[in-house]
Amino acid sequence: MTTVRLTLEYDGTAYAGWQIQPNGLSVQQVVEDALARVVGEPVRLHSSGRTDAGVHALGMVAHFQTERALPLSAYREGVNRFLPRDVAVTEAAIAPEGFHARFSARGKWYRYIIYQGPVRSPLRERTSWHIRSALDVAAMALGARSMVGRHDFAAFRSSSCEARTSIREIFSLEILPHGDLLFVDVKGSGFLKNMVRIMVGTLVEIGMGKRSVRDVETLLREGRREGAGCTAPAQGLCLKEVWYETPGIEG
Image: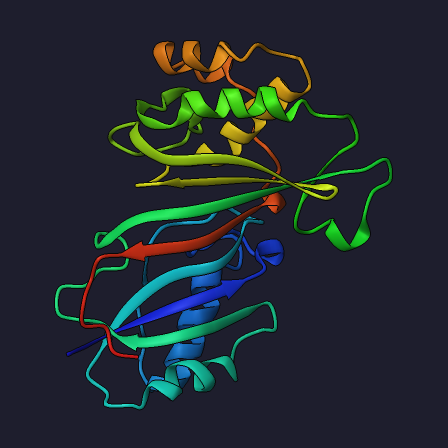
């Protein structure tokens, strides 16, 4: 049995998220359908995580197992022939024994993009959150600093989150101005449902002067979701990279 690791890029606008849903088309579904046409049998993908409806990915990692002996090009070029234009396999590799896209992962990098301008931008509509008002980036950076480290992020998860523990570790959280864009780069060991989007929503409210920088420490201590900021719109979020400490991957 061979374990094949795939790296995927997709525009999540048209999808009900990564995971297969009973009432909506998912990214997982279209990739599994394309793989089945190449492999000649049903395929079940195991991903590094689940992106919500409307969220994008540049580096989603998933794996599957097969007994078929096909060249790696079949899992990239071959599969891409059967995928819609908004989803693509960017890399295919043979993973070592024991590799699991989710459980072998050591960290993830998400980027949230905020567009600041007086007029909406049609070209950025699908990939950013448009905020017309000026943001205090320095205050946002101070709030972000309190989120770095190992904390209980109960206040920063969706009420429908099913994770057994809300303790997570954030390696870094940077606020990066880039012209009329503001990048919020979050790197961590793992994330709760809607966690990054609620973190961003809270930081934006700090940047607007609607809440104090000290609110972050209170939220981490008290763990009340109703005390945190809004959930930032899905279209601004992109899974940039998932990284592993797994030697011996062939690709």
